[in-house]
Image 1 (cartoon, rainbow, N blue to C red):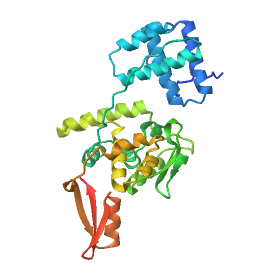
Image 2: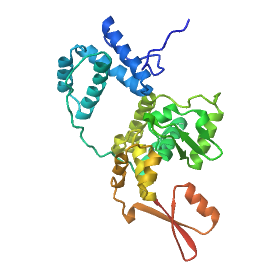
Image 3: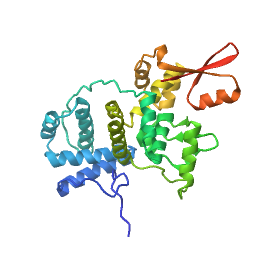
Image 4: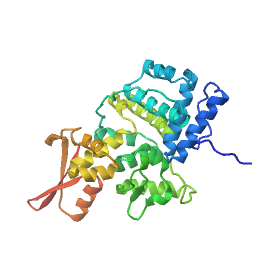
Length: 315
């Protein structure tokens, strides 16, 4: 006999066990999660709320807003994390008829790290075949890791070598182009698995992060490149956003490709890197085949000169 899944379980069969909650707190947490589901919150937000509320309930009296406010204030964490905890507890207060004076935190603005194309290539080439595919897709499309987790077979257009991504956070979907080599890897990956159109293709974000952490540490130690440790899965999105704007100089196009609702989030990518002429490798093509090969390798067309076409690619 089946049972009703708990909202926020994210389809997982195992979560880190916390201290037992009282029946009253369990009921109120469940009410919060169920109400969020009915109000249209996405599953990842519900899941994060579930984990954070259980953490708060384990560490302090969750039904005492003053103690929760003190707990958040004294927590050794960034202002952004504290703001997130306040947001989550605010939902608990709202859905359970409590009142509190919400604390105000100013989120620190941090410039994201943008890896070089060389660093990304090192990580891809150092990975297993499955994770070389995962990282190649993130590089080519700028998808959020959660969007890759949700990717289903029916959203892939193999004929065009594109992914019709379902955008996270309730935003408009978008069509993202894969490089020919990545599309071929993805086609091979799918052909070796028994999947239906609604099958998800990759592991959860948590699993991908753990595996990627191991891969980059191995590569960093083997190649004596400690800077590789600065890169996380989201760094591939920062690389994509930076390179898309640099290539097109079109902020609205970059916004659409990234799936941003607020263009302020896209403007960050206009000044993350100052490109200099020596940052490029230049090649020439004298035939259509040579030009196609350069485009497939990531080179962009610059100009015609003395009967040849000049292409360039960031180092």
